[in-house]
Image (tube, rainbow, N blue to C red):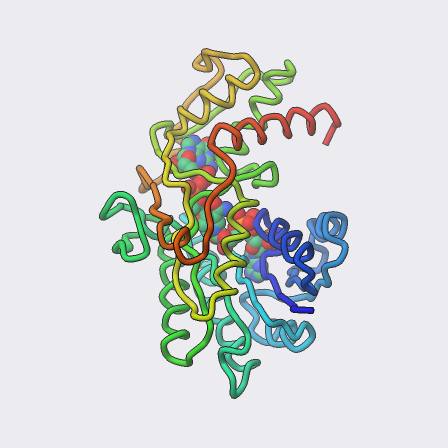
Length: 326
Ligand code: NAP
Ligand code: F7E
């Protein structure tokens, strides 16, 4: 039975990946941080097969212990401070976890693997946010990085460090440059879930306003369940590498609002939406759209859920959640 260790198991992707690997017959382990993590119960309920190990990406020895106890064949580094807006408020913490945390886990894997550095396969959760002020359209693996946020800068560090460990030590270390991916499990701080939750409450007569920032930014939004499969496929390749994972379609926040409100029969959302500069960013990433040609050709990966299906999945799930009193 192959085994895998996941950092960030309590997050959106960690939960989908854990389910994906359990379904494939893996012995799945997760790193969980904090003395009483409120999301532990969620992991235990959704994926009871997972074994949890205390650890933190800022604490190298805790990662060494998790590796010793889990003995994984594959390590997926999904842990991060992942909210871009927050990264300006806490740039140091973001760098500590999202940048230097990658160095810690790479070093832990290298030391753990000993004489055979490629024995433990490694996945790094890189991000389209690294493209920032985009230097070409669409963005692919070779596009120059120009990050626009402390989060993007931290991810660029982790991305290059992953490549460096691959080239320096011969590690089987791959980097997935994933464009935005969403689901009913998306954190409520991100714009898609903020919209789907608000639309659910408005449709049920429980709210009448949604306050947002920039409505003109464009993102390449896919479904998280599809994207964790791409992560797994990368680690099954004989050679490690870097892959863009994206749908190749881009939509604005306005487009998202059109479809989300449309799901509950509201054609004109303007009366419900107010813009507040508090939600604008010091530097915006205006438009992202990925070229996932390499993932398609080498990994045989393609997205299965359309933008419209994704939005409707999220809105309907939030309506059910509100009705159930969650
Ligand atoms: P998420 O829901 O925000 O989850 C982040 C995870 O990181 C949580 O499990 C969190 O644990 C963990 N974490 C935070 N600080 C940590 C620390 N000091 N030590 C160990 N773990 C820590 O993020 P996601 O959407 O699942 O994304 C997964 C990864 O992909 C992240 O690295 C993200 O930056 C990257 N990414 C995401 C997207 C996207 O669109 N979703 C796109 C590209 C890349 P707690 O529960 O303890 O806070
Ligand atoms: O913002 C605009 C905002 O916070 C998307 C993370 O998973 O994907 C995610 O980062 C857009 C931005 O995601 C609000 O200005 C408008 O242009 O949902 P978001 P993100 O910043 O793209 C990348 C790939 C990651 O790697 C990250 O970890 O929406 N926007 N009004 C708003 N955004 C938020 N959050 N809230 C608003 O009220």
